[in-house]
Image 1 (tube, rainbow, N blue to C red):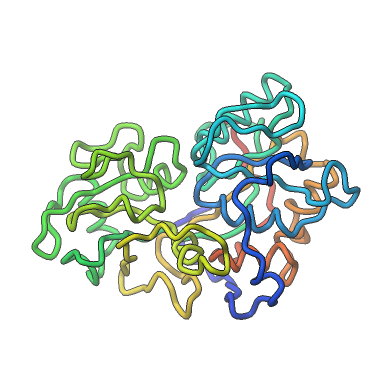
Image 2: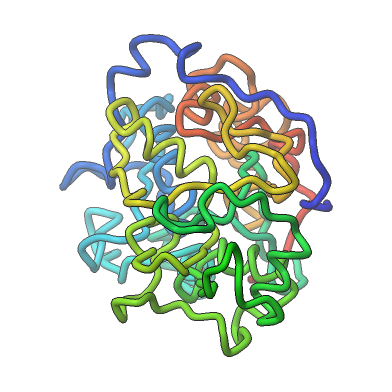
Length: 337
């Protein structure tokens, strides 16, 4: 699967969604004391859309809750408690942290986590885990609105030159390339697109901003200088823009998304599915659990609830800024981490 290919995809706009879905913003983490059958942790990129999906997907047998999915945000109070007995665990922040937590849960047999949210593909080969795509996202360079770089039309080679420390000035301003926090799927994805090592980036690239704080992914407030540039999920940007409808905290700050080769990140309030840097986002399951009825019903196969146009789950996906993925529900991508 080549994430650089411009793929045609259908994106439902928020205006096309039902009033009922628009009127009930998703809640971060399940309410205290409420436990659900399927527990998800990990990616910041997809935390909000999984909260939305979790608010509409029913548990058909009503046990232990009428809702099936409990999705815990990447940031917030830690530890989190995912089951009524035991299962008090540190909150995983990011795709890799979520996948590691799932691996640890599988190894220990504690059954505290059922799947991990991930905005990256597998890091290592193997068959322990299956990465099931459910939506299409795209990632844009973001700068401050008061930066001379605002409105600059980038191309991929130029962005790679910036992140490889070969280009140090854009629109007359010295440029400071930033990466999100370690463990972020967006960090891994963007580093791959930029041709650098996510774990050992070039000296000019930092995951600490001008205020000395770690750069949390998709948080525009991390851009403290007019020289800053950082990757930003277009879907997250849309969900934050529509915070009144989605319930997502507006973390955009002064960040504005930039064009690549003239392609706009957002068109008519929807993600441009033809934006050059795009990717599938995933829910990661232990491969041996894919036959379970609820997982199959919601996540796997082209007829899964998440993949069926017009379903409540698919409408939540669109409300939170993601486009439909032509790979939705496929189970052929596996790995061990």
